[in-house]
Image (cartoon, rainbow over all chains, first blue to last red; front, top):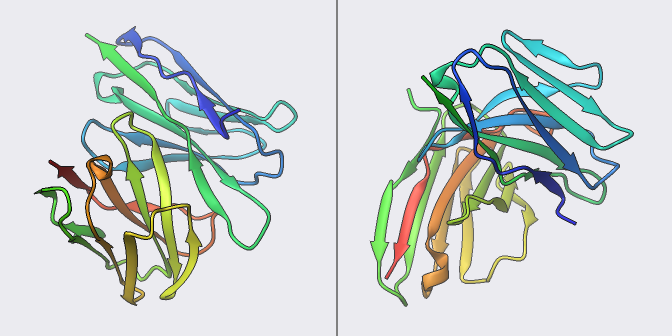
Length: 112
Length: 113
């Protein structure tokens, strides 16, 4: 089983649509969770951290379900500029080091 | 005012050559990283340095040697380049630990022919 799994998509949605991405992780001891955004041929950038209580930033809502080891990202009122790859990111815990594990990403294409 | 910069942006070279990629961050962060993103877009950590000390060394061939002359710089030297080394290499930095946002450089697209 991959450490972080995402549906690769692509998700093709019209402008204004609501779209949801899901992600599962295998390490139950993981403690930090993030969604990153990566535009084509660009570097990844942090979109938002994911907290146990769920958090919202404008049109974006992230949720964490520790029992199911599941993270989600909801985008409301999609814009053309939301077209990008969304990376689910989880830290690994335990041992002498921590490191971030990136999912392979979910491609979103918002159509006019 | 680039936060994390890498040079070169593109690198095309032949098999067997040795090449270096440089990374600098002006954010005052303590931790720096090298990632490799392959053709399938999978982003995987290679190395991590904290205050010039190596703290993560994934199962990367020893042809890859990172060097951190100071905490603002982390360079990556690759010996005897192979076709499979073709990828985009990203440098990143974070304030410290793992709960903090990682800031990525623009990437170096390496093509080995």
